[in-house]
Length: 456
Image 1: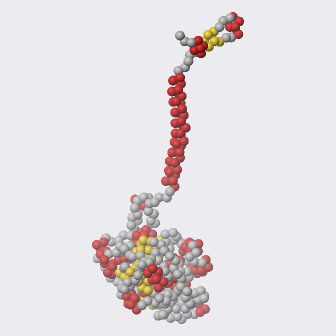
Image 2 (image 1 turned 135 degrees about the vertical axis):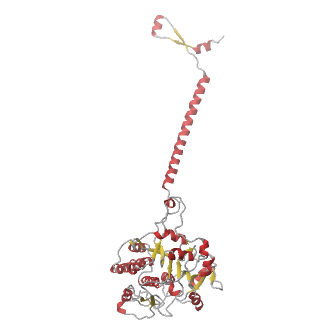
Image 3 (image 1 turned 180 degrees about the horizontal axis):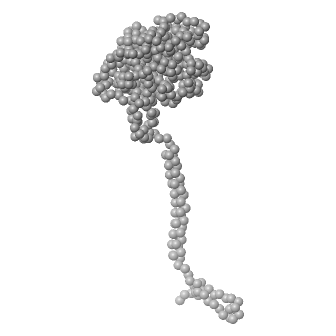
């Protein structure tokens, strides 16, 4: 029998005033709830609450990370190869599929297949109907002092270049069958001296791939991609001074007893004519026909680049196939020489004063601020120059060199001027994608050491 205390816990006695008055007492029995059922539901609620409290922040964090990854992918530049600029019709238009983002860059320099390259021969010298039959180079230092406003203490004219007057400059653009112009090497001992052995070697070169490094300059990059046919027929020539020779020996590039390093014939130059090493480099770059008198063709490659194509194949693709005489790489960033002048000053590659002197002369000579010439870009980057050594091309290069000596050594400024003044046939600028097919560019490794020279 249950005790009285347990019964009392299960019974509730409610007494109201009315009940007291009537003497009635209401008895209400309160049921005891199951402890087990309350505990299970509470646990479920607590589990759901904990899950919500932990899961919702994790879900929000996952959504935030996903959004950040999406935005990062959308804003990050594509790593696909850069799209080449439109090429001239001589090289053919690239298809839409080739230009599509993510697709491999298709070569826009069409060389012959290896079998044809292996058997490629120099073409016969064509009968020319050109208006220029010969170019005679001035070898006199005679000049009229009062006709040379640029012949001052800061003038770069010297016994190597001769002292070109403004009158002679103007006459050099008037085409005749026989042209007489300044073109370096004005006197025998004027500068840029090479040994008798090297002169003899250069006399027998018919096709030349040339580069140079003066004042320490860049490393020597061995050419690649050539056939055995080109190795037999092409002279690879690198012009160095003693400073570059010493710095390269420290790098382990020592000239052999045969004057070779790999495929390059090293020619040491003494008595460089300019204190500006960049200007010394213009001699093999622009007037290679003065160094290789018997050569029919030459290819210039800047020292920062590695030539990676067959030279005879390049001549066939850029000159012979299109009946061209001069082909060089166009500028990839700008089209106007006046825009290029602003960039040169901004990058401190020349002083504002010397650039302005050059531009004032060009404006006076009627050169417009136009981005196209004959429907094509006229501003050259000129790190690769492919040319024949015919009289008309030699004249063009001589006048280009004279402008570089008279004004700034930035040849990008003077090329459009000479092009517009001479208007020679057979000159073409190949697109950036073709230059990338021709060379691997490594950039300049070290600063060159300027020469300290007395005025000549």
